[in-house]
Image (cartoon, rainbow, N blue to C red):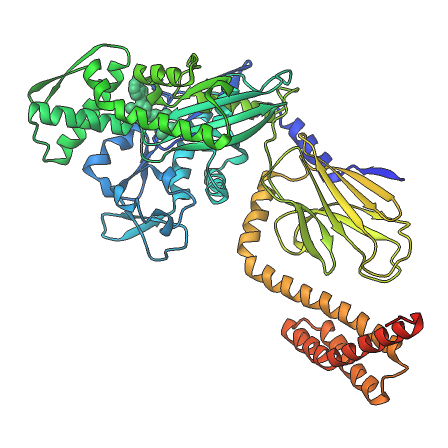
Length: 628
Ligand code: ADP
Ligand code: MG
């Protein structure tokens, strides 16, 4: 039983690179629906970075287009929300990775226009410029504007260029949304080393999951932002984060609290809100009142010549039904994960809106335990992202954090096809086995070539290594039982084992794949697989037709040999004619031609095969003298 390991050259190079560029900070970014921010680790501690004015670490996720097409991002863009809504894009995160069809129900909620020219393609936002022309921006481009602002901010802080980042996304984001986030990073000049789930980052910020002495923890992350509510239940074991369930409400957040205050005042003081400026002004004042009431019992403000009051009690009565809805989501998340409240070890509060004292109290009553709220809830996600970035930079040696495998791992099968064994985005560690057999009579060797990637043909994927299972006892094709096992551990180390069960022959190889590929290469490969889906399908169809043809050719020739005794020479001649035509078609690359020749041969041989079967059965009965 030989066992050897392949030390991948590419893997080594990449690791050396990582070492040589130590010193360049990898930053953590929370790209939020309402606010975005960037953080980094300084002397072992994660800190969020404020702008040059030193005021706030939060950059409102708003992009405004000036009439000349230039952009302003963040606080500077905020004022245009009410005055030039059609050129001021907010909540772009809601559009990332979505098609117009995905947004059918919500498209009218935005102050700007989403174009519908193709329902199934990714959406774009239409922006009118002053020359009367319309320009179209993808959510990826818009998000990139926000990321560029954050990149400039951290570069200013550090006085050096920054090119690598970890960006967070909600746990429920699908592949398209994650890919779009990655692409936005790339467009902003950032190599996105990892996309991390927001609840995972939040747990890291609180130091949960950073030590592997933890025998396992179940965490609830309650995240109430400006416009969205998410609750995620996580299981953390040995540094591996598993999302057990997610729930929430994509249109419930602090904005609704502001609106509740506006409604309260409008009726109470009989306010006329008939201009965009007034409507914008009252919303801003409502938000100020809400924030003040997170610490004070009473708020007083001036609006349009009137003095407006609000007590914390009045505010709480207004928002209590909204808070109840979030708790109903928590209930559903628990149910989906098959857990009770008592199974939750930690409850983490995330998002600016969790500063509201009523929320802290209700959530802590609901779970029956003190919530974790010692960190700034606006910053938790970004701080966690910075810690993850620091881990990737190699500054926190003992921690391993790998929750999913980013690319599929599989082997080459007949015809050069990729057979994915561990699909991309699988949780690690994982173990998968699959059974194969031989395709040729008397085959004594089987080459196992391991590939990584999403394309249908192995030639388009990345080869990680190969080995040969030898000493398979000679048997007819299809008889050997070969099982191939893939074991992927939490470090991203892949071990592949092949076993022939009838003889017990076994061989294995260890492949270190974690650093085998840069994220940039990965993004390219994924994009490639999308762009080439059609050609891949054609290539796959051709490869399949060829494989089938080769199998049929083998059995047709075998059929002639085995049935020579009774086949007429005319029949043999006909079969040979069809066989030759099929063999010739396999040389070409026209799958329709191959299929046509296959069909011809099959049509001719099927009745002969039936006859052969009858004759064999008759012969067997005679030989064995079966009694009647
Ligand atoms: P997102 O994750 O959607 O980007 P954030 O976590 O930044 O959002 O939360 C923004 C929301 O938090 C806004 O609605 C804001 O008004 C609210 N918020 C911020 N500070 C406070 C506070 N002190 N009290 C109540 N709500 C607050
Ligand atoms: Mg958030």
